[in-house]
Image (cartoon, rainbow, N blue to C red; front, side, top):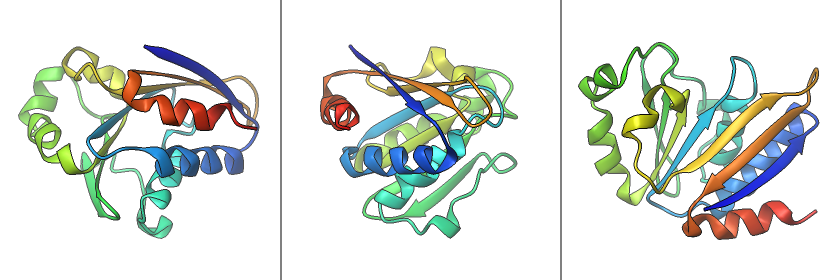
Length: 156
């Protein structure tokens, strides 16, 4: 499992980082994002979706509806688990069905720590940490299938 840390100094940098990730994200990917409220998960998601051909104006956090489905180059399932209680309630709300449906698309999960025990092993995990006003540290970890993303992140 590879790890990589990158610092984002602004919302614009986080959005651009999302675009770089989205450009290299293979179909069948699950991206599990963790971090406190307001740390940039939805902004990164907006960049990823943009690179996948989803108009940015369509992308918003599905906090109250659990999942937004977007049509881009591949189907994108954007989940926000902020209001989800436990793994059982996530399963009851159809999460397992989305894992199956995403074989041809991408799943982006905000607040993934709430379902860590039921996530597949081959996910790209992104941990956000607020290190200053607009500064964020993003720690990426994932299996070999995300190697191209890590190579892209290492480029200056």
